[in-house]
Length: 222
Image 1 (tube, rainbow, N blue to C red):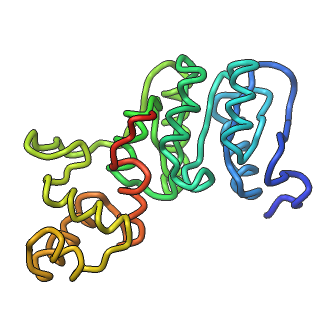
Image 2 (image 1 turned 30 degrees about the vertical axis):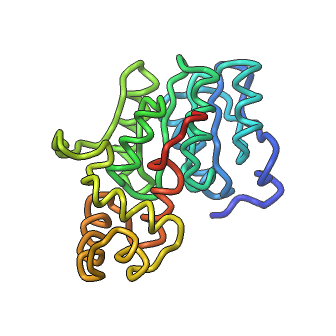
C-alpha cells in the first residue's frame, strides 16, 4: 500500500502526469500523497500533481504559476493558520481546499476566514470527499454544516471568559495559576476548559492550546 519513500520526498516537488492544468498538494506523508493524488485524478481528472510539504516552497510555486486546484493538509503544516493565510493570499483566485484529519468546526471556520474555498476531512467517505473536491474545483465552496453561532460569543464560539482561559492554557499555565490570574476558582477554570474542548472540538488540552497559540491570539502581522 505505501509508496516507496523515494517516490514522494518529504521536501521538494513531486510531479506525476502531463503538463496540463495541475494540482498543488501540500502534504508530508507519502501514503497520503499517493491516496489524494489518486482521488484527485478520479474526480477532477487533471493530469499533473505537484506535491510538497513546505509552505515556503508552495508559495514559490504559486507565485510562478497558479494551479487549477490547491490542496493543503493542516497536519503537514502544523496547523499554521497564519502561514496558510499568507499562502492563499499569493493566489487568492485559485480554488483552495484545506484537508484535516477529522472535522473540527472551529478549524473549518478559521480556514474559511483565511481564504480557503473548502474544508474536508480524511475521515469523509470517498463519495463525500470527491463531491467536496468537485464542488470547489467547479467554482463553488464546501464547508461542513455547523450550528449558527451566538452573536455574544467570539468568532471561535467561545465567551470572552473562556477565551481568557484558553489564552492562558496556550502559554502553559496550570488550572491553579489560571484561577489566581483571572480571580476565579480552580473549579470554575475546570468547567471553562470542559466547555472550551466541547465548543472548539479539541480532543484534549494540548490541542486546545494549539488552537489558541496558532490563531486566536491577536495577529497584527497577518
